[in-house]
Length: 620
Image (tube, rainbow, N blue to C red; front, side):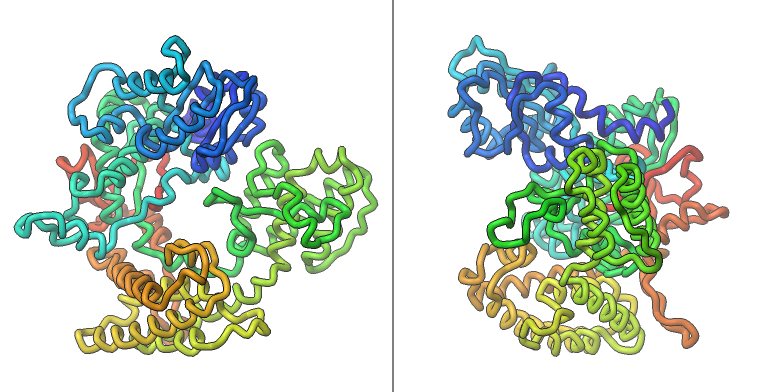
């Protein structure tokens, strides 16, 4: 098997061990593992393997009287809250056979239990098996605990995400201060690049080691010895962990294939991550449609238009939502891949073409129309299928993608989305002519404007926070300044904090983003003091974002100023790195560290180390 073929098949292969155990079982699964399953075939995969039921991993769930077997699939260490939930579920059930799968390997369970020496066998898993029997009420019942790296979500055959690690966030200056506070003054780190694994919080160490273990399992599966490269302090730690992984050391001696893997800290370029780029259909779908509950990679598609029901308060939520993950249909998969990479005009035309082709196959009375594709036109094509259950079932994947496109194109938030795009372009030009303080001042009138609700393009608090991230991520090299300018910036920041505090405390509801930032669930809990404190911490983080590239030499800028003939432009960091990788001269690049054997054998090198087979990039 070629390495590229192995990479494509590996995510599905990780589920084989789970599928072999689910026959006649009720399956309890946490959100992170559910999301991986979602992109690997969905619940159908478990039911086809013989599962009786699938339930949320929650203390409020339990098995039925006639369900003697349970399978738990979790993405965490088997202790603390995770162990408590498993105990609760078993206590309210009648299980005689329990199987627990965790994505965290046994070696990391030893670390989580403060065991630093290697032990024979899997003593932590063995002890947990005994606990399972105790909770079931009979030591003669059967219990099994094992590791399965079910963390990969293949959005396409070439593009995989790891939602289980979505909360890993690269280190910023504020994190360095927190780390140094717990260290003796003489042993404090001078910069983020000096931070080592042992100085990180235990929870973060476990996440990093688990990620390295999952990647090592991938390279083991495809018989590949990898060369790890990193750009950024967090990537350096992860690449070093992978390079020093025990299996990696053995694999590099005998694996027949070669590959290079590049880790890149996402905080080195948040401009592209939060920006509105305007010419990709999937970007708009992911931006405006509601997120699928418990997921970070998929959205909800309203399926009401596939019925004759009217959209009222009574019909809201009575249908299960559609989504973007379409694993059952090859046609839908190809359409999804086109939508993901093509420009918006091409993607929308392909959606229309697939809907027309599907309707023609089912002999539905479709009326062809040329010219610009509209949301109403796509909806009219989708609605042709609602009177034919067979046609609807056969083409459900294409119909869901068609509805996602239509609902995004006519979404009421789209004018606001376009306004953000226009404002980002204005800010990008202003950064070349003004200092950061003057650019930030341009946000003040927008923040202070009242939300009248009459203008659909009026920016929300969420939009304003995203614009701030956009500005801070690009501003450092666009408008450098001395101490006086920093004081000026600090003064404007205080004005922004005051204006945002007033705006936030007047909110009648809080978006999921605002709930996460403020730590409260409703506006009634949001006091002026708490809001002001939260925003002060937020601006401290933003300042860290603006300094994230300070240590870089070749990749220190993502901004090209205007030269009179051309406008100022944003230069994506990932694109810069890839251009360096594939540059015919293989130029030396001091910003890329080669981790040949872990942090103890660190080399600074150019790209001459890159293998000629294939490479993969992991933005963190």
